[in-house]
Each structure stands twice: as C-alpha cells, then as structure tokens.
Length: 82
Image (cartoon, rainbow, N blue to C red; front, top):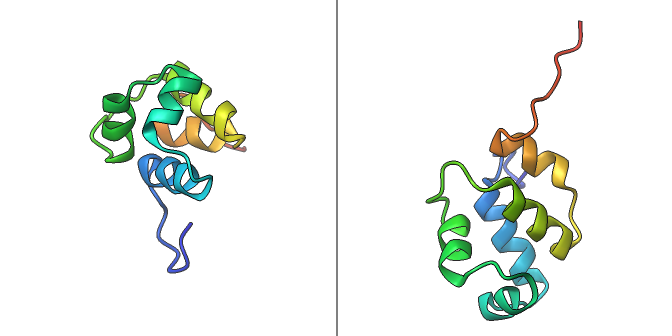
C-alpha cells in the first residue's frame, strides 16, 4: 500500500524493491537468470499473467514474501472465511 491507501501493482512493488536494493536489471539477470526484457515488462505491468516461477525466483532473490505477490498475480487463491 502507498501512503494514499492505493494498492501498488506487482510491477511497482518489484521495481521499488529492486531500486531500494540498488540493483540494476543486469545484476538481476546475472544472479537469477530473469531476462532484462521480462523484468522490464514485469515492472511496467505489461505482463498480465506473470510466470509463477519467475515471481518465486524474484521474491526469493529480493527476500520478500511470495504469498501477497502470488495472491495479486492470481497464482494463490485466497480462501474466504465462512
């Protein structure tokens, strides 16, 4: 969530984390194998159905929780409480 209460997109979150860690797309590619083009498109929210495996790799690499990202991407279905 941003300060205004508007939920960030997956791309915004991933880009924010990458930039906060002062990582270039080239460093991410070298360390994870995720291509610069895929990362660019993912961070620009151009990919509507991101790969679960790529999201998992990036979350592990950035040391962030996969569950909220997985829910946002529709990979994890949030159970409704009765």
